[in-house]
Each structure stands twice: as structure tokens, then as C-alpha cells.
Image (cartoon, rainbow, N blue to C red; front, side, top):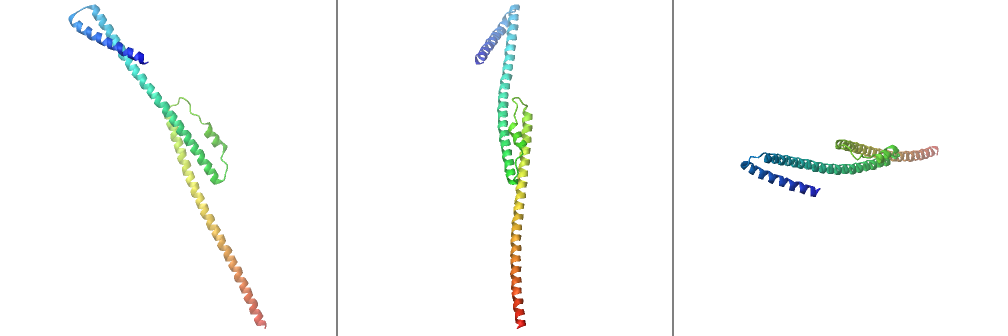
Length: 192
């Protein structure tokens, strides 16, 4: 590739210098052979400039394809990270709820494959969808945490109410026994 480019540059330089020489001689000499030679030099210079443009386009496309493949790899890694985070959150949610994690969700997370040649817009759409799903899962997780906190508070109040009821019942029984004892003493005093 480098040798071919150097050869092209060298040939292009030769054609240009010859073209300049021909232009100078054209002013002095009026000959059909020189005109033909001049036309050939113009054709060669045009081809050489077209080849340079083509090689520049090819170089740009190579750089673009390398950038796209790097972007695709970065997106694939980020997608895998998001999928693992989503799986972790689902597991945490399942642990909080005390349920088992559905197999279809875990299998789907493991079997997603990214094709080798895919349109970047499709990847961006999928990434945006994943981000939306992650945002929804975060929101659901926050809601579940709030529900758990509310249930814990309700449980604490029920436990404290139950304790208060037990203390009230114990106090009632104690007061009833004391009343019974007083009534018994009163009755025994009246009988005497």
C-alpha cells in the first residue's frame, strides 16, 4: 500500500513536470506530436488525481468502518453491562418479594446476540430501549422499596398496637381481680 502510494506520487510528479515542460515548449513549437503527447499527459494527470480522490475516499471509509466497529463493540459491552444490571435488579426485587425469578427472563438475557453487521441506528434504538427498560425497572424497584417501607411501618404499628392491647388486657384483668378481691372483702365485712 505504501509503496504503491509512493509510486503514484512519484509518477504524478513526473507527469506534472513533463506537463509543465510541454506547456513551455508549446509556446515555442507548434507540432501535432507535441499536442498528442500533451493530451496523454493531461489524461494521465486526470487519472492520477481521480486515483488520489478514490484512495482518499477508501481511506475515509476504512477509518469510518474502524470507528463503527469500535462503536459497535462499545455498545455491545454497554448492552451486556445493562443486561447484567437488569438481571441483578430483578434478582434483588425477587429477593425482596420472596418469589422465584422467572426462567424466561434470565434465559432471554443470556441468549441475546448482536449480529456482526448491523445498522448503527438499530443499535442506538436498541440501546435507547434498554435505557428505557432500565429506567422503568429502577422506578419499579423504588416503588417496591417504598411499598416495603410502608409495610414495615404498618407492621411496626400493628406490633405496637398488639402490645398495647395486651397491656390493656393485662391491666383489665388485674383491675378485675382487684375488684373481685374488694367485692369479696366487702361481702365478708357485711356478713360479719
